[in-house]
Length: 422
Image (tube, rainbow, N blue to C red; front, side):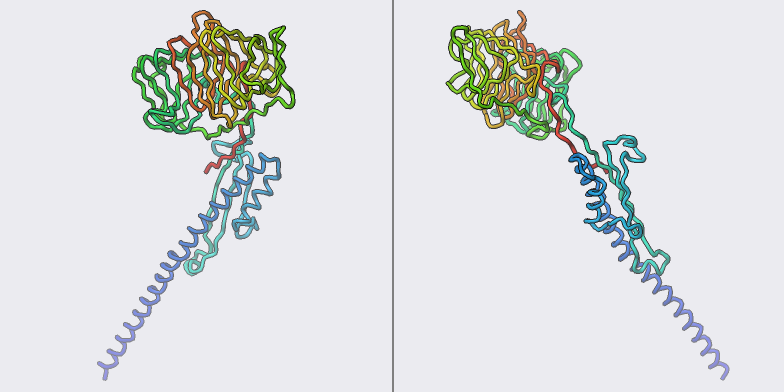
């Protein structure tokens, strides 16, 4: 009888131990469920909070550029993404300038700190009633600024892509030598092999601290003819069209009228064929809007101070041994802009001239091809110009001098930028 009692006691003890093991097992299962379910929910919530903070930062920056109530807009963007700044489940903190970090004290930057408190389902059993996630995002609202297009560069090829045999972005060949003062060369093409091409005896000499910058790669046949060398490859591209306010210039209803007795023509729209008309040597100051070619023939002379040419259609051809002295306006909306080929014109600008020819002012051909065929600097000929075109080709036997000075060229507004920084 005693033996049976002992067996019953042993069985009871074993049953109690089993119950304890089961309880701990259940707690473990709940913990695993908390880790799986609540952990997944926390991950999702942190991603949503990051998205909401980014939306708030971008909306706030954009609204500030537009002159609106950026704080209200940022909070509305966060609320639209599920975080209403109620002070209980979430808070949205907005600071400009940021309170700390590398952008502290810079009012161009907006800091968004979004804190979310997520209630758990199973975590409360193991003492974790809420999970807190914090999203920290900074955006930059960069306002428009007045200045040169592509500061630091005198020659700019805009084409975002190009080929090696045709439609080259930037090429120099034959025996041409470019001497650059005051600016470098920027080539926007992403072609990894031949965005910039130099072959034959084509030479580039940058005579100061400026540089040759290429988004893609360069194909250079004779490195000893390029200064500085090696060129800077693999640089960040620029958007196309370029992120600048483009010229807003025109002639209105004014008509260009020639006076053959004085060999002079007034500014305005010229629709009577090739410009300038035969026998005209002097241009009155102002804007000339051309619907046909602009040609200065071999041996022809043309002078114009404070003039601008808007090539609505047609090409530009300044022939070899032509003598000209043309300079851009010094005041007004088009100050510093000499030749403008809008995006609707896919023509070409071909520059040549005599040993005394001079251009002063920006040459801008958004879709056009610029060909620099000569202008020997030995007797003073020079381009005092920033030259920006879709494609650029230099093919000459001359020593071509480009002396870029910002004060002689066109300044414009950069487009406002909104940049997200995490």
